[in-house]
Image (cartoon, rainbow, N blue to C red; front, side, top):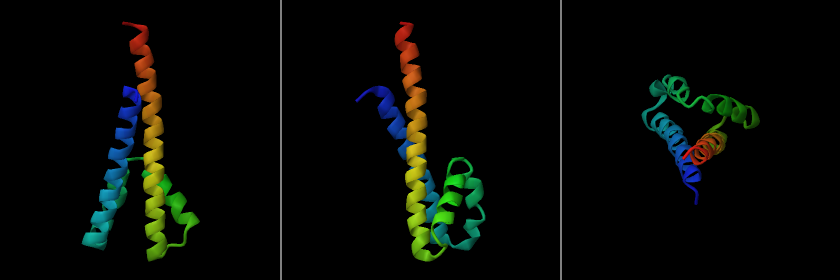
Length: 99
């Protein structure tokens, strides 16, 4: 596996795990931490549009909140992995061009 692909997958996993941690904290500690959700997930800027997108697809109930959260985590992972692939692949090509 190329180094740039490994870095890209790691970036996607770390940021998707961060979003999952925020969701778990909200579920564990109740509504008061829910007010911090938009600030925390804004650190991963794709999470907010992805959440709005998935909440428009699924009705906002407990079961569908779980499904939309999983879908959002997958979108966050895919977005940042693709972004990492672009960045690290270009960086690798530039480094190999100029030894």
